[in-house]
Image 1 (cartoon, rainbow, N blue to C red):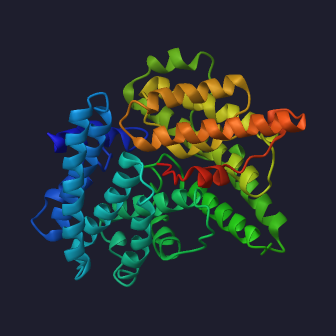
Image 2 (cartoon, one colour):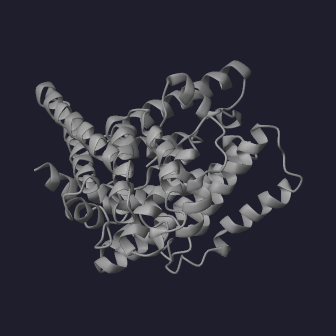
Length: 395
């Protein structure tokens, strides 16, 4: 039952546009069931743990059932760690897929399903794991290895944008990202393009250097290159008209394949626009009024996407936009997204709601205290997160 729940409920929520290429319906389950090695058993138990945590969250209205499912989840989580430990002590290239998928699934279980801050520990271990395979580079030899590896790479880059501590480069960035990002479909599991994800990584590294007082001499050129890269004019992925009149009603009449194509393009655009917000936020230190048009664009695209798909939108772009939302109509769209997301059984969505409400509250309080409009107040949302004791997994 838990395995079935994973494939039918969790898997579609792990990717923006569900299709036959969804690896959580194919690659992860088949890798878990391919043999009886410790690595495959570790992934199997990790999948059951993620599923049980999700069911437990969905049943919070029934305290007894909630506790029972959580207990089951913790047992499978522990079993996965034990099997993984056996595998990591003598990892073979043939077990790379199962070990990498297990590390990713345990990370998701901690940050997404449990809402725990311990998810980052798994990423700390991924770096060392990847270095063992620098010579073999299994991610270049099979589709399954590449799919799992690109999920690790892009999830790491996204998760580091939330890290309150400067992290710099790692083997995941230097070895894994540079290798897997050359594939044409890189980023599809999170609904972003390769160039945008590389730009996010660059912005993060620039921001960390600046925070440490290491300001590059060519910072202006670097910022300009990011702006050019993120310009809609420089994007060849938008081969559909995303702004047609009455697009919701028109889209519903399109064949499913055309709807999927439109949604893919729409998600690429909102991710790109959110990266513009991130650039202005992390490096240029622009107040909300300077990015309002981008915030509005991301949230309106998100509402269209959610209306057609029911809420499997990636978390990073809409959260980044929501941190800068000061207008009532924009915050209302954020609340609509939160209302849908809170019913998915994913704890990080509930944490996001608490964090966003606190950011909005602190911005309003500071604005009132200084006689300013909230859209003039810059709030360091990562500092707010630190005070609350959160470490939000934005996946």
